[in-house]
Image (cartoon, rainbow, N blue to C red; front, side):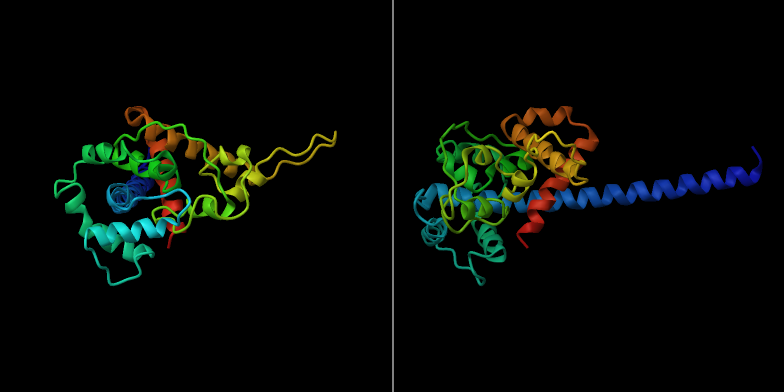
Length: 248
């Protein structure tokens, strides 16, 4: 190999190294952001469980208001906004789990939480990111379209009730947290004997379904994380970023 070729290879290797380092830095920054948002969200829901007296047929914002009143927490922003929620969570964290932030305390708190509340507030995402356990509660939950969509605003708390809006068919409800418009578009076409060219967006829908299922499986079995490939971890982080950005 001549000197010129070696120089080109060395330059390519150097560029690849820089690109890899940048990707790792971006991944780490995304991970840290997801962890911070998960803590703020989990603390807010924990406060509701402990002192908000949540009710299935009552807007969740009322339970959130009771929790803030119980802990004597005032915020400068609207407590129903993400900014206000984060501010409140920062003041609540020492009262809920202490300054050491032991996730075992979250496992303990959510043992007594109603299943509908865990699902409505998308606590599976917090559990997957922070590595704590949620109880397995197979409650029959009836969604409304507005409530279903609100549940996807993680890390922002829903403000209404799960049943708000038009009833969601059970088949679609079982695909939570996949957005309703995606479940509609992902339905197989009618078998009318005609070949239909595959939608180029189908793969994206399947990826979203697969990643969301993995996130839920991981929430129930955190030990699965040890067997995840770097690629799968990155896919999960991108999934959490998607939900995080939807709240902004």
